[in-house]
Image 1 (tube, rainbow, N blue to C red):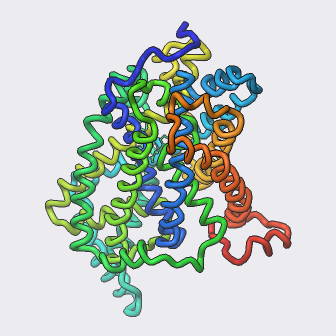
Image 2 (cartoon, rainbow, N blue to C red; image 1 turned 90 degrees about the vertical axis):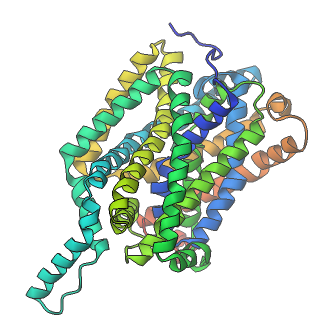
Length: 485
Ligand code: TRP
């Protein structure tokens, strides 16, 4: 039996930990979820709210999670449980870990599907099929206008959209890649933290970063940089509603990997000589930088080729192929390398999502690590296939897990760290100086009320977008700023 108790495995080095944590944070959330969420929520104003959420809410909760993890030396559920016992508080607080862990698990169920889409685009990039978009658009336009001289021209963006829809509609192929992706995850997680997760992240993250910068360069030169800057940097607050705030909080937490208690588990492997506030700052900074860079890689192309910025989850898979196609032969190399590295970035995140469930099974149920990894892999396969074959529900699952469960868990973590635990409990983790004072103020007085408010009103507002009818007084209260789900 693996035994309940402090983790004995630790990160190999401080750099390795930072890379694994950055690897967890930087993933599909940055280059797939961030651009389409920003696009659906109007761009600039959303981004400002998003940055505020990272700085004031995300960072505070991130530090709380690391502090709880290192202090207890255990994974999410057990860690919270043991600290509340040490303070003589109700052991029901362990339930917080449950909400977070379930959120991580359900995020993983669709995360692997999007990752399978990414895999599917690698052979497409390699075979040069994006290079044929312009010709295909001309052909379709000619055909349409032969039938009706007044027919609108078919654009490259239309062709890329068709390509995306066709790609994710190929259920057998997506299913096969889904299985492949799950197998790799199981294999890495089964090998443990140091040998698997840390090693993979240390090699892959820097390479990804370099390639992303290269693509931004291209997008700024060849795309419509002015329109993108206008969209991303000029805030228009007239469209902002409670739903926008919820989307921003959800995106911030999803992207930082905060609010699932995962970082409690990662904190448990953290050595004493790591400075938690500094590490949190580096991780949040790197994650935010990658999201912004991804925005500047994707939107110039969106505007130059007339794609729809509010086009939803397909945005990444529609706009980038256009860019790679426009690069000529170079696009074959850049495109395939990019989707490959995007896959690696997704992998370093998915293994962290998987670590939550696996470390719990290992610790609590006395299952061996490989056994736990294989079992979870099997359940993931069942649910993932459900998404692939139904072709639906990802939007809603993404909303419930990312925008509701993560903020809810984060709210409870903040109340736990700020109000249930005493200050001296975390002095060994966060010091006794100004950083501690500011953190404690934020975690007590800022995070819980802000999150509580945004959760209640934002959820109601967003559910209207999913078609829920609210009583009239609530609709009046929420005002006209209803975002379309
Ligand atoms: N942050 C990752 C991304 O942006 C996804 C992720 C990994 C995550 N671990 C998490 C999200 C834990 C929420 C909770 O792709």
